[in-house]
Length: 411
Image (cartoon, rainbow, N blue to C red; front, side, top):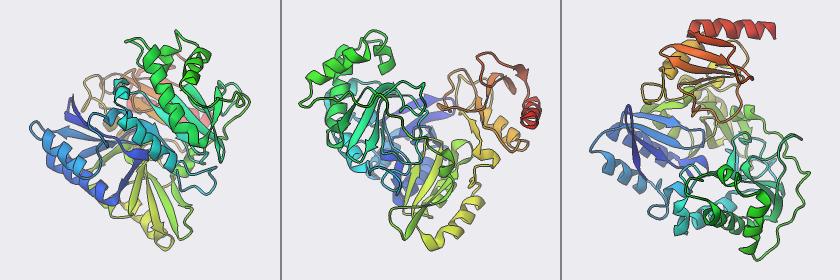
């Protein structure tokens, strides 16, 4: 684990296996954020947490306490290879094709024990999809695996599972039990072939075709890859399932989802969330799922989430607003996007998603949104919809709100 500098102090990313932390771990993060940092914690779009405002001199204490809570890597220096995304409902969704959590556990163990894989970029990302109804299918991943049946996975490179006919198809398929071995072969092949400046799979595919990469991979395997998934399409996910109460495989329990306003928690809020359920899962929508909640308690837990300020239905303003860290925490941001988003929330129309980005890097949203407000100066934004050119420039939040209201009415 490491701490990197930011405008508001040190920033410590906590990589969560499958986005999950126990109630005890949630309390530990809240306590260490208050003791060693600003008390603010961000949920990320890769289902992780970030402690903000780490004070100088408190770094060792913060990392030690996180490791004691079981939130560090299994082996030293292997933290960055744990970039494996699962569905927030992995192992819970009764409609999934299979429970991917045993495969994920085996894979994470192998990733962390393979010293050579530490050469990968911290941004090198993978996805393991079990066919759950709730899954982030818009994020591009360096390597993705998606279940086509209970015992077989399709996979691809530098993209995401195909849900539409125009999406690039899967490259091949593999038995479920062979997924960890294939992933290791893919990653070693990437390291074998990539030049120093090629840090992501999309970079490698600029100089090596996918077929050429697979030829190298096949030489490392003791089993044959099958070219039988070209026509397969992954059923669409329903992002609205991250809200409200849903059944789990265990019939006596439910899971409950709610949106964290702009992905920003404080220590008090996280501590309160940890008191509501034995397990939490962060999601790639910067929201949270409470797991293993007794069915009889579901109604009262939803009311407590509302009291904490979380959105529990998809139509609420903070369910449809995304904002990056902004100028309070990031030197690259032109505006305080979180404060501006709070201002916009009071006049949001009833439909549509909006992303406020402090700069062109678009850190907070890796998936599709209806409207993007790109900061160009404090409190000033260029407004984009689906075209590469802005349809309004240098507008205020009030002007953006009026444009949103008109466009919703026109629709």
